[in-house]
Image (cartoon, rainbow, N blue to C red):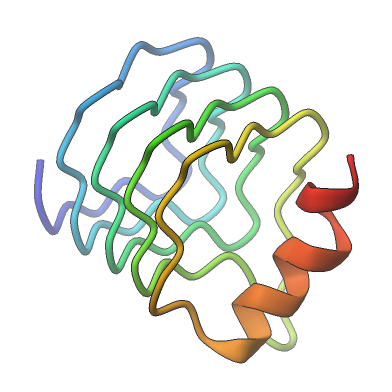
Length: 104
């Protein structure tokens, strides 16, 4: 599923562990409670997505976009980032994760 336009898609509770979603657009998608453990989300846009309770355990998040100035932030209550590879995130994305996810 590389480079797919999945804007506003409903993946609530989906088991997407190990999926390759490289460079896909998941803006405003509903991923509440989805399992993305070990998934490759490199270059994925998640701006405005509902990520509550989503597991990114061990996922690749290289250059993943969670926030964009002027757009709504994703919902991140209960997100799991244990062992996720976040190398290569921009400073803006790192700051967002530091202020939200890592303090939960």
